[in-house]
Picture 1: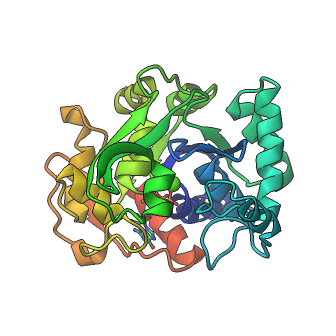
Picture 2: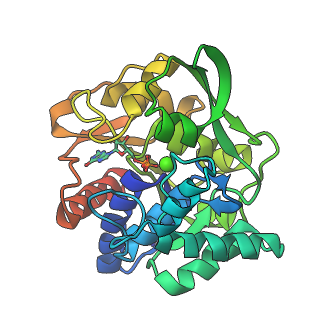
Length: 317
Ligand code: GDP
Ligand code: CA
């Protein structure tokens, strides 16, 4: 069996641990199509937060407390940069992490596309799933917000890391999405998939930028594989992170049903055949979509693996 997962960073990476565990038990292949909207160049380095969260988490190198970056990280480079007054000072750049960004940036500068760079980094980390960026093209999430008395578009990282998303926010823009093509391997993976899963990632700033690559979205929406999404909202709460702020900006109800309706039924131009919600949200109504309630707390790998089994069951595969 072939499983394709559309995913963001931390939440998606946790989910992928369960996907990988379940896939091993049924001898399935997993391809993760990862959001690149968070990608940013800082201090001359190309940083890919979601790709790195997935890569580090799946290989056991992620910091479990912080949720991002490497375990056992040190911060000498960050402190030295601050001594120079080098902006941005609000971004956490760990020493170990810098090595990853250096290798990536060197390869990108030499002309390798991000998909090949990612494959090269994964040779070291062996995440156990095929990791593909949604696109090799530039696609960045920018946020139109009122910052220090002025309305402007700032990079998603600045909005989230610097301002904690706590500024009046108007909209999210996926810069470059119109021209972005799916990365090599993405369309084939979707075409050959037995099931496509949408991870319980942030629908607005993790999954939407993946789907902003038009051909990718069309391939999933028109593809032969059933599509099952997993709710990132449990009982009206985003569990961890800022999905509530993002959904409110879009005028979408912060609920499992709200996100399910946002993705919409495949029969009506949406994406979903099935929508998995938490038992707290039993009875959530998403017209045209097969909704099922199971525990959705990714408290450990066993719980997450059970979620994945339920998702595949709902997909009928
Ligand atoms: P990011 O790119 O690092 O922000 O991570 P993702 O977008 O992949 O995932 C973040 C989302 O995961 C959050 O907005 C939450 O809604 C969701 N999430 C986090 N933990 C859990 C959990 O235990 N269960 C479920 N269902 N969703 C979760
Ligand atoms: Ca992210």
